[in-house]
Image (cartoon, rainbow, N blue to C red; front, side, top):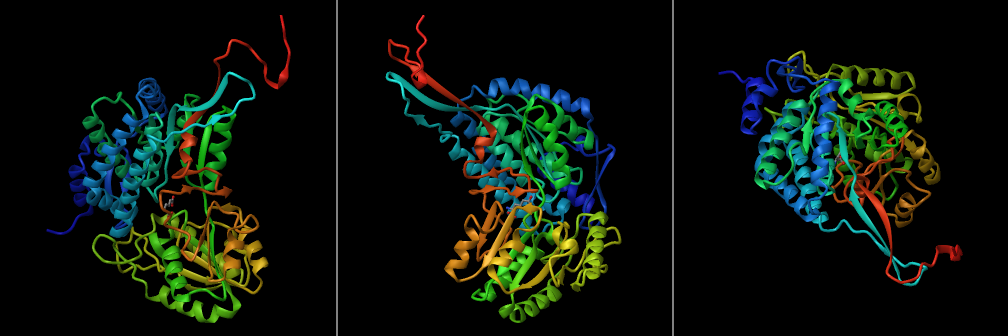
Length: 505
Ligand code: UN1
């Protein structure tokens, strides 16, 4: 029997417990970037269905907010257990649907497990402060309360991890979730929901509709964004998408967490460990076929080490394996679709026109059917930061530039719209600390001697400027999913007013 990706996909979905009615006979066609073949036809929902889902979520909120946070944590602990059991299958589905290598597919599920562990601990640590008051016989404190319905809009490239960052935190914080996944990756969303449903069943005491998935087009996302009952919209995608979502949510005084574009850079200094830098840059720029928001897209190399490092990088680009992530050990899988391929080729042409020297970037046609888009990653030596270098192209293109002056390179580094991730390769303490200082990298993530991608869940994840300013995942990102109440309690028999104001009646 010949291998059929559609068959493989429906076998995995069956093992994950997804109801076939959810992915057959509908109008949303789902394709695997691995072969370009159709894998499913999903029934779609419309804006009215989203409104109904928000109504159900609002009911769930009223019950869930009263469940003690450590009990809510128990549900997330069970979700972590279910994810551990489903890791191989869900990882494979990520490979089928997003084209990731098996290791990266599994890594994405591991990220989901990690955030569950984090959130379980957090469920006993949703601390507020006790604050000294200026009045005798008074106590002042703050409490963190559940916020309300959380709307999650996620992108194709991390189809499930980003949902889990939001959902694990939202659930322990007392909030239900309505999720609109990318239309390119609906199957992993259905699978994640099925996994969570198993945890909810085992938990036994959760209100109905704590988590709902919306399969549908743009109008369903808009319905989430526009509905005032959605207290928080957490949206991952392009800066253009964020420019539309942010003002709409702000206009109704909702909260948003925006995780938008990145144009992440590395800086290689004279003292850098070049072997280490080479490997970090290779993974950062070529891994996941350049389709992480944290992918390294710009590289500044000091003039004194340029000729040692860049020829080796070009060689690595030439020899990196590109191919089917399901049937080969290739490190670089497919681009998500034809549009991504066209955007990559347009950027390469623009870079050439701006004086760039291009290595790689061509289509690799012999590894897959015509409808799949595999490319050799491109390394482009640029005379300066011009043309397409200032823009994020969601494909494996690394623009490489020389520098001589440290202060100037920091300026160049920060002279783009996005501000997500950044890294410096140096053994010089002054350079490293300067890069991490207030006058250094302007990004939400700044690393030393590691690449720009592959952040751990324990840190807050997100970036500044056109990246949108939101923070998800670790550290105190949970505060974005709760509302703070400041409480002052008078246990005296008098009523002193603050600031010494007198008002005797
Ligand atoms: C994304 O590309 O949207 O830091 C998220 C990383 C991953 C998450 C990327 N942990 O590369």
